[in-house]
Amino acid sequence: MAARRPEPVQVVKQRRDAALHALVHGVPYIQFLGVEFDRRGDELTAVMPFDEKLIGNPLIPALHGGATAAFLEITAIIGLSWSYLWDDIESGEIDTDELAIGHLPRLPKTIDFTVDYLRSGLPRDAYARAKVNRSGRRYASVHVEAWQDQRGKLFAQGTGHFLMPRRDE
Image 1 (cartoon, rainbow, N blue to C red):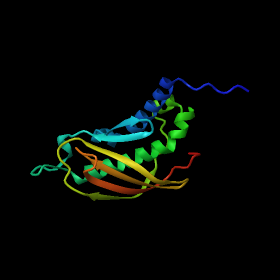
Image 2: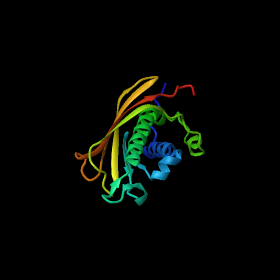
Image 3: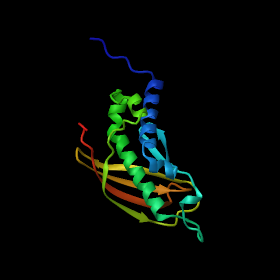
Image 4: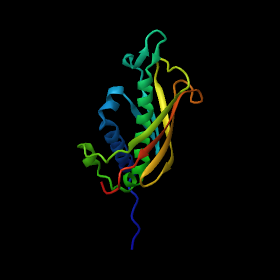
């Protein structure tokens, strides 16, 4: 039996990009906040471009705590979904045409999410990365860190626990 030829790198990259695009653009609130994701291999960095509507206290000015918390939770959910779906994306089991027309896989559901506000979010772009600490069939734990100008100078971090969708849904 002959070994299966590897797919061209462009085909794999297109499938990855299409899956990420469908995940991100399938949730209206992500669009409202303007959050996008930069993909490098299997690593995602969330980017929330600055917008005046994100300001909570115009006297400082500082990012609204709710916008910060939503940014962290979005990053956790998309990061967790990305790691959960990675093998299916790589193997081609996920039909990107189905994703494009809105047939999204079920997203993890938040059980709880805790945010630590470390300093005021400044009126500039924000970045975040999620690290999946544990992911099982039913439950996952994710830690997220957010920064603005310097990766080592966090302005917020969060930890969440999520109920994973069943594989047969």
